[in-house]
Image (cartoon, rainbow, N blue to C red):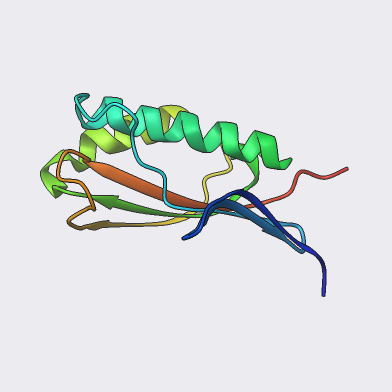
Amino acid sequence: MGDIHYTDAGKRMSQVTVHNGTVYLAGQVPHDPSADMQGQTQQVLETIERLLDNAGSGKDHLLSATIWVTDMAEFDAMNAAWDAWVAPGRPPVRACVEARLAKPEWKVEIMVVAALAEG
């Protein structure tokens, strides 16, 4: 059993956990909730990319993504940001559901799992 590394750990949760070559991110939310769905999704994806890079991975190593949106009527706007961001030819398995998020101004939350980069 390999070591477990926790990054940005608080009392309740860590933002990143790495174990046995796999990077697990906590659900990420937008920092500027005044943006529309596409803008909020872009913010979240930028944060995910930064956290993955810091952990020694990247969006081209994604294994899975879970996406929560507050209104499926905005599914296409979320997908516009996602499709522009995801690594071509390397989309992860993905689920997307409609849910009420912890703060009503948030429109999207995304949690991903990725492999560490090789070598």
